[in-house]
Image 1: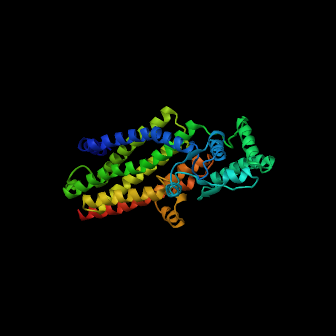
Image 2 (image 1 turned 30 degrees about the vertical axis):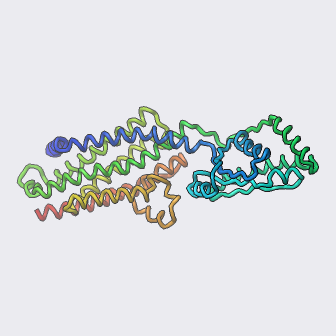
Image 3 (image 1 turned 60 degrees about the horizontal axis):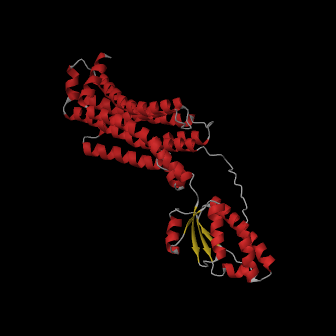
Length: 381
């Protein structure tokens, strides 16, 4: 135990930069909870945006647009081309495109009906409600049109009187939304995704430490010192875990002190993050024992981290990806890490024991591979 403690103090003196980056990573994650959370709230609770092309530019079309903005709280995007709106629709910056025909006012004023063209993609919920709101307005105007009996002047007079009537429309939310909760849980699920990237940067330092000792003959010299090979690898692993715990501790400490509503039990969060930290330490030791080039180690660790974060659902729900990629993601520990938190946020009674068991198996498997490689290196030394 004394030798392990000596190794730990030595590593602290050798790698002050790694300790600084661990602290910086923890603070950066804390900042993300707040900053990203506010962005999530702004996007989630903002008014629905709709592109409008008004070919009519009449009194009736103006009243219709006023109905959408003032009564239904839609945000209209106008004064642009159809191609521009099409691109916005494809990029999902708007929910639908509404086209008001040139005969919109004319047809209603003479007692006929005139439809409004709606173009949407897969935004089923918004487009359905939009269609219902438009139909409600058109029914009202149709009643005015029938009452006018095909007389344009009478229709315009009825429309003017209709506009003067202040008809209150009461809107009730199907589910009450707590903006503060949405911000905190949105900030958490996004920041925890960046944790997966930051934690692997720490593993690069651990790998470089072991690789430098290999190339400098430490494995050979360790045979004639009081430090046993097993104590050396334990000391190195403890230092790597210490770096991870600094980052995890700052992040979880902030959540605890600020009482952030993550949607996940606090001690479950600590357990899963610590378990994944242990996996990254074992992974970094395997890389250092299996590879002899710093460039290769950096490429593999950063590559595995980047691909794992994307496929694992760190930046977006993996359910949005094709089925083949969803199946591929299940062989990555990042998937089971993120899936644990997404399950809890969706259902507080979710069963996450399989996720924890799989993360534990990933850690054990990586540890065993490292033990075999270390045993081989020790024998060769």
